[in-house]
Image 1 (spheres, helix red, strand yellow):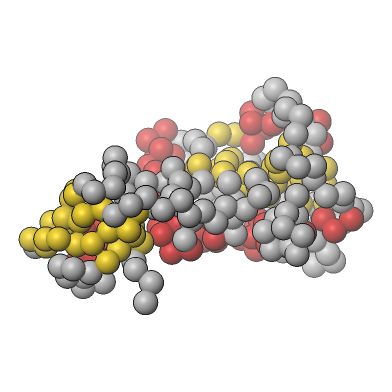
Image 2 (image 1 turned 135 degrees about the vertical axis):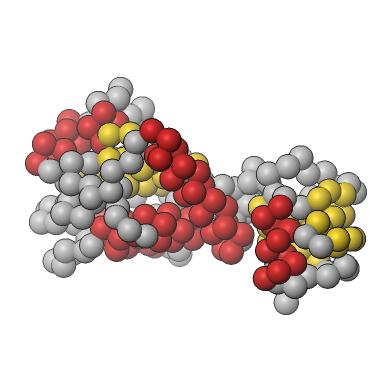
Length: 253
């Protein structure tokens, strides 16, 4: 049975002991019912992991002892940044969670003209922190040892107006009716990154489409059917991994 995995944003070193963070300890004791002597795996999000074993449990205070660092990674050779327009309800949580499982390198939440969800100030900051927690939990589940970055929310047109993307970045926008398909595009050069822009419910406004084109985004289609915002980004990420990432037989770009 695979040892349960916990993200532990603390200094980790082989041969040392530490108390698990409060939330992790509560989950270990209440949900998983772990006891003294049980194995687990810790990772700090920066790469690699540590096998560990529980040495004491005092109510919800769990102390563990760390073994030797293991240089294990399962990152995709294709670096994809998902630029996702804010989605309503719990759709954004689902998108963040599944994007992590599908190997995304970073997530940029943006407010678009047609976004139903509106977040500003402290409320926006709290939501970003929540999504970062979703990222950590998804990494625990899927075996990733590097946490994808979730950036602060900003307006889509403001984000598009930033200096042009540096060379080595391919910008793609899902656009129903676009002539090119993902499969028709040439394989990225070695080390070339991808930025994938997905609209909210109702897609992007014409002005946003024009701004994206000026910023170097190429419209591409996933086929004849129009996908919901919570489906489109995840389907595109899966297609990208199949075509150019670690799902393809040639091993990536």
